[in-house]
Length: 314
Image (cartoon, helix red, strand yellow):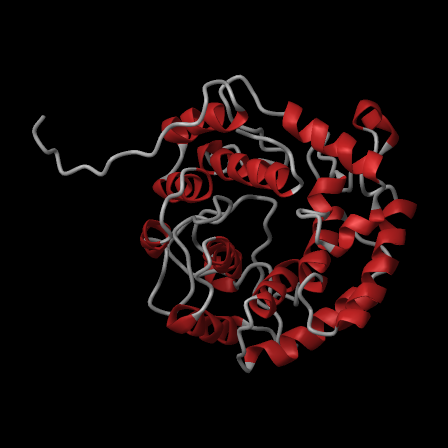
């Protein structure tokens, strides 16, 4: 048979497994970036093509834009996009080198007076933005934006001057939380899971776990969701489950939940795979923005979460 120049494909997973069903969904709907991520995580694909796909969103200032996160459209770099890019680099083991040095310079350039990140930088003004994402001239520091970035950089042993003040901000923000909502708690966990001071992180996580249970911020019984409140501003039914807080068994948040509670939540996650092979988007959606950008990433992350907790996905 004549050579086509195309690389040979790895053996497909067995039909009808969660991965096989998700694979078809990803090939039908995903951006190139999510296709490459899926191939890397579940088809032994290389990391280089993921980096190449991610480069399409990178700007000269070292940050990332171009609707990498669909709620913010337009070309300008934003902390939200750049945090997404860092998660991708971390997922493929490439969170190092000059690329991350440029990212840290960008983070420095958009930081607040506290040395932390705003949720949205004012450069977004004038470009299409989801109506529930405020764009203000002097945005405050946000743990939601800063915590995951700082934690990820510490996990990858990145050292940069930006991290010193940003780490101090995260400690102050986490340790002063008295009331919160699931996404902010998840950002705090992302910081604490990799914070260098492990005894301090464990103590802070223990306190947050008590807060989560006291305020019923985790839906512990998927069969009785009416018993758990949805945080103000969230979409109807936008509950968060133990697996949302403890993405891996090694997370400090895993200690917040019993084995039975975690098992029920993972069963619920597995059951959420839809007929088309993808997982649904549970958060508030912006009508003009197609969900096709979000659902493949949600699908990849759902499969990774299930696999990290020892669930067979095929």
